[in-house]
Length: 401
Image 1: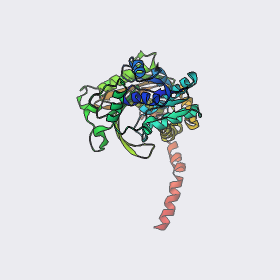
Image 2: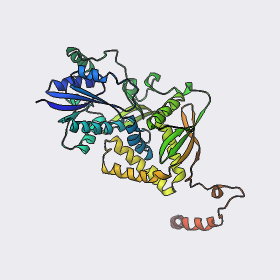
Image 3: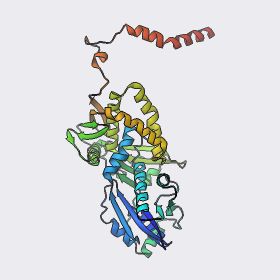
Image 4: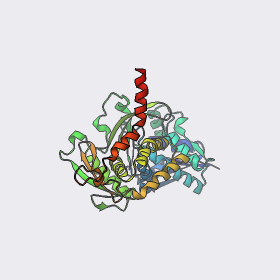
């Protein structure tokens, strides 16, 4: 009896070849494709998968689940890997893994498989996520062990088995896209000194070619979730994010160019586009600052954000620490309500206004007008107590001079 495997399937060359490669080794292959907001037509996926040798093909719309259960927790933590990367591709892998495990159990599959390479981060994200959910399931990674040494050899194999793969001039870039953003690497980007060519970018306009007048938008948050843009409410969160991608892309915002530290120990030059995500990061951070006390806000941005991003990047979405940090950020959510006014202009995102019914800003204490209620005389005693350690330090240093 053939063993059954659920394969994470994109329909590209690698995963199409994997279908036949596994079939030749005695597996019944069921492909799994998730719609997480990538801008491509998935309607022909089942036909392509079966033509490659799959016994069945599953295509599932996960855009709303991805937006609410994966993008939003990351936003609440203000998590940016190494302070820059909004974890675009990192977020879809645990969700895809979760669904593959579900279907493996439902369809009595012995294993799941992915198309990641041996030096990438995705192999870790897939495998750790799968094992956290089912520690006994087998995970296959054909690209790490098969005999093909080049894309040309894969193409010859595809021709031999009549696998329906479009063979065109190879694009210089490797591109991964979902609702939260686009990841771009390879080709001329592998030289960290080379400025990214404009043809590398997929969803953003060059800032210098964007409109001459700035664009203002207001994002409304309720319970830490963006619900409206310029007063227009969105019932589906993924549609709001996509609209921000469109608006931001028009003004050239959301581009990230960085050399990042991969989990396997190598450095990699990556280019990202995440206009919607980065607009929300700026807006959320500003609103959170308005409604949380100093110690809480400082702890989140100095400790939670960094660790959360590191955990997600390193494939530890289902770890206990990540789940505990979610509880911390969720505790703050009820007060993250209000509106943030954002200015988009020539590649820049700037918050220019914010308001909330839970605002901790009190104009009567902040003002320097006659409305000032702050007791300035208290400052004398405050600095005297607060500055005592520095006064003592100064005395000791003075003795040594």
